Amino acid sequence: MRPQDIIRKKRDGEELLPEEIAFFISGVTRDEIANYQVSALLMAIFLNGMTDAEQSALTQAMLHSGEILDFSDIPKPKADKHSTGGVGDKTSLLIAPFAAAAGVCVPMISGRGLGHTGGTLDKLESIPGYRVDLSLKEFRSVLDQAGFAMNGQTSEIAPADRKLYSLRDATATVEAIPLIVASIISKKGAAGLDAMVIDVKTGSGAFMRAQDRARELARALVRTGNSLGVKSQALITDMNQPLGRAVGNSLEVLECIELLRGEVHEGTRPVLELSIELAARMIVLSGLEPSVEAAGARVRKVHESGAALECFQKNVEAQGGDARVCDDPAQVLPLTDASVRVESARSGFVAKVNTEEIGHAIAEAGGGRVRIEDRIDPAVGFINEVKIGDAVRAGELIGLVYCDDSSRGRRAAERIQTAYEIDDAPPTELAFLIKEVIED
Image 1 (cartoon, rainbow, N blue to C red):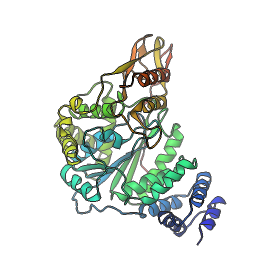
Image 2: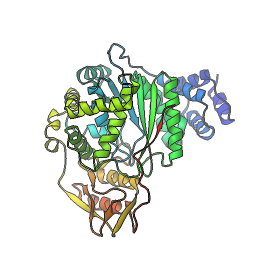
Image 3: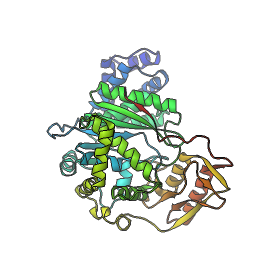
Image 4: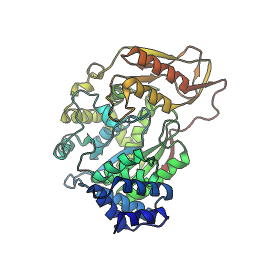
């Protein structure tokens, strides 16, 4: 078997056999196949797609390129949630303690932010001392102590994915749905999951802007997850405006801790409700409740009783963070008082928001990464004060950019102002936060 024969077959639109895919991925993992050959296959997949059988075989091969974690001795169902990413998308910080406090073991392998989207690991690292580079032994210890653990992808987990991802970025094949699915499911499957809920974002701040493309991705993720024995379900959710009020690492952690403490406001309620919905679906797929309604009631109970906050505090302490953040987050988190007003350019109604532009503005002000090697200032962020459909007057506050560098803060504020489209009439329809549920 030769790499060029496999490349030729996929180039010509033929279906690859599982053993051909396994051979190629094994060669990638062992550095036995040249980058130019890997790049050629990636482009062939991008142009010709993959059948369900090929998709499952690719994911299996990437999953088995490294270690598969075994938590079978933990007497709880193992489940996780994945989001395709957005702006202000902070739900993992709520879902993990909600599900863990409700009886689910949550071994969460998360990622970092790049471009306009934030990353769960970056948010968590704004908590002083919090570690996301746990060894597998430490990861297991945190699961035992807190019921959930949050970690980055280690060298042992799906090493083929790391190699393919770097080449996907360099070869303009990032958007290929078979490659996205294999990347996501191989990492999640390596965590030894029984169930998984996927939040596929759509809209102006999403990776998949068009809802039909988001649906295509969601269905592929669910089918592939189920084919590997991981009970899977996807929600397609709206990302046409930031989720909640806060954008930026420390500000988003602050918002989540306030929600865990029961401090809910109109602007942050969508974060809470979406988190409850996603956690409830994890609980149903895990077999702990028969319906989303019953599971939702279970989540609300652990939220209102303080059990979820206690679970979060145990996790922070177990992962080396300053657990006082749960008692007084504004004192513990790295925040700044230096702010720049973002004002409405005219009177009218908020009709549209270019959410991606807001994400880029905060990233370039230091709150995210433009390049993967960039360092993040966790204090940089944006507090959004309006939502689509709101009436505004010229000069009225839309939000505040927080940044110690005044020139960067002003540039971000100017850029964010242009992201809000103000019309004379209110929008005729307001989007639902949850657009679709994909179950198979």
